Image (cartoon, rainbow, N blue to C red; front, side, top):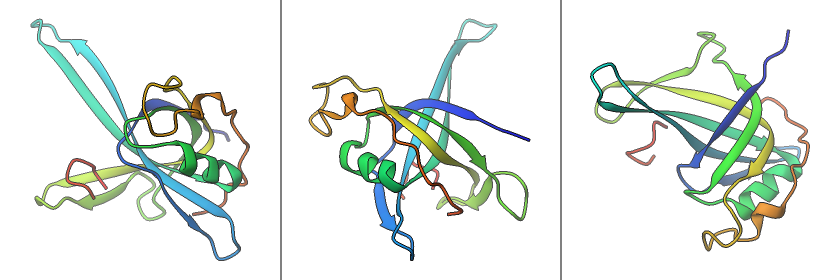
Length: 144
């Protein structure tokens, strides 16, 4: 069996890096994807889905160094399911409503924001993806 997920979206906040006990770098960041369409009545609709992305190894270090909130990225990876439910991680928001977090283990991250478009990570667009050695591993407007 095999699954592959490709996301194109914007970072919801700056990446956060930590290290596993064996010294492997792990960087996590939220990515928002949006789609817009016009419904049958002519109204413009928009839907946003949030994904929590984790990348490992050298790629984690590069992502932490060059990515920042608002940057556009392409993430290729696999969906990580909740062991208890077999689906997304379910949680309760601060306002009491239910939410779900879609977890993605990123294998490739491509930086899509053009050079010089923002101050943070201005040189990041030229960096090529680095393979990862992936293992098992709020703000009010973010779902996690």
